[in-house]
Image 1 (cartoon, chains in turn red, green):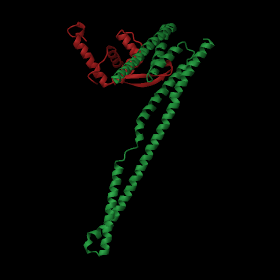
Image 2 (image 1 turned 45 degrees about the vertical axis):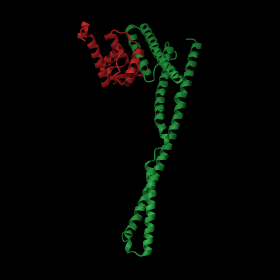
Image 3 (image 1 turned 135 degrees about the vertical axis):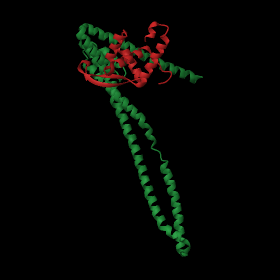
Image 4 (image 1 turned 60 degrees about the horizontal axis):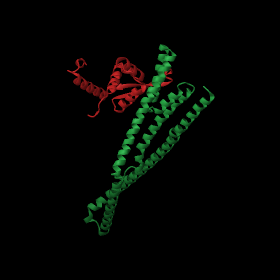
Length: 110
Length: 230
């Protein structure tokens, strides 16, 4: 993890969704989690682009699951957040909290 | 669907399959043959080096035996007859000369490097791994071909063309799964509409990303061009 690396807002949301979903984090559940909790409509393509980028940065890792008939015989790709991803997310959220504290009342409850 | 439309679809698929066959069968075969050749050369070189080492060991052991035979006479050189003395001194100088030659041979053997062709192994391994991914992508194309009569055939084909190899299967699988889920919850029409919308949005995002990458490469080429012209 280099000093210059940082997380965008959507990357934060994706990492948080994966952490919340635990062992059931794959494309569609991550997308649903973001849409329901963050109220943010998300295309599956945009989500996969972000997942690919996060995996390239080694913040997450993925492994293939079993193929199911309702998926047209295609396997699910499950995602897990790496230690470096958790550290980066913590750092990124702390930065937002620091910036918001004392300015937005909501910042104090973050 | 008319016969003409179906034939066009079949031709589109045939062209794509032809291009992919070059990348997934002919090129991998060539790379595999090259790797077998490279590994053969490396193995041959290793064997040759092992044989040389054995020769050195045998020569060295022979030299030690001869030294052991001459040593007692050399220790009592002053008490042996002149004839025998000359023989022992000649044997000593011959052994010393041989020792120098053995040292040179050993030095050559220890400084021997693995054949230069071994530098080709990592890139060939990398290419072989790449071809395996390409083969998986071709497999996913076969699944799309199975649905050649589906009303989302072209969308899925476009999606397949623009997604990266590791993720295309998971991406299309996720879309199919959600479509099935929505179809049972909201009805077929709503599920179809959602599916098409998702594919369009995904295509837009992926194509935009590809354009951005191309633009980045273009900028890099432009910068290099300016730098070389200076």
